[in-house]
Amino acid sequence: MIKIAIFGVGLMGGSLALCFKGKPDLHVVGHSTRLSSVHKYMERGVVDSATTSLREAAEDADFIFLCVPVGSLNDYLGQLAELKLKPGCIVTDVGSTKASVTACARSLDLSPAVFIGGHPMAGSERSGVEAASSYLYENAFYVITPDHSTPVEAVERLRELLKLTRANIVVVDADEHDDIVGAISHLPHMIAVALTNQVRKYNDSNSLYAQLAAGGFRDITRIASSDPNVWRDILVNNREVMLRLIQDWNEGIQQFSDMLAAGDIEGIGEAFRTSGEFRNSLPERRKGMIHSIYECYVDVPDHPGIIGRIATELGNRRINLSNIQIIESREDVPGILRLSFRTQDDVDQAVVALGELQYSVHF
Image (cartoon, rainbow, N blue to C red; front, side):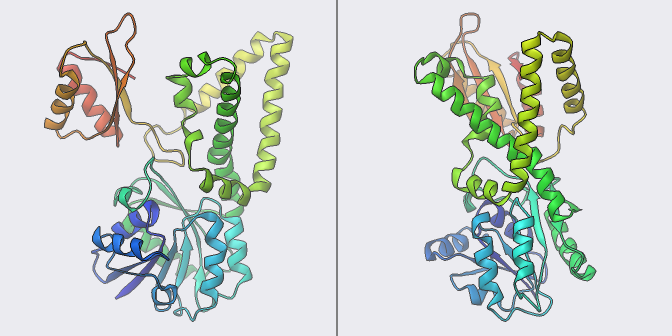
């Protein structure tokens, strides 16, 4: 029996547990420092067993997944280094920065275990074990970051286990990972926060900013609502990369400033053209660091029960809604519903179904 220990059975760890649980010859153990969480794991059937004892969870494990906040990873590695781990045990993590945790593992004596950094590039707006799903990683990229001293056999064993997540496994150097993820995820989060706070300050003296910021502004700054505790740890752990990226960003903004000051219409147009060309070349339906929005808008008449009828029609077609938002009516349209879904396939089916029912649907 292969024992898999998961420290931190929340969204990420719980989803891994559900991918492994019930498979032949695999036994999944969940760990939490809180007894109430241990009970929750077992009540929800996410793991085969659970414990508050780090030693009990780790010492005879074949695989150890550290699914704790980035700021806690080094502490957990330090505790594991004090234990007698099973020969050949693979210790990995799911943090979104890799260089710092890899350096920490290298500085410790984890032998006879092996550390291989990991980062499943998927997520959800929800959190906790309640949001865990065996489908979370399907078709997402799952990055692993072995270094030159990592045994090839250990890398292949981890690859083989992670195939159960149905993710696309990619091997990347830890420093290269942090450079790329810093640019495509960490920097956008910082920009969204800065932009939102800029508008917040304007709104202090004119409440029209908030009133008119619905729709597009709310969508493009959605990630500014990310968990502050999680993101402060991520950014601090990747600070050298972030400082370099911020400098590049400032240079790009300065170029825009210079073009505006000079009235450089051609330059501004070219900036939009090249960015649009690159963005349009990006994969549209692949899971990534910043999870996609799956939603559509429906123009609806102001009739009693209309929302219930739409929800019922979608339910009858087994199309799962994750959220319904009533958007304030405007002059030319009686009302608008924002319908949110969990997958692109659900959106596509909903658009077809609502079109057949003669509703006006748009994105």
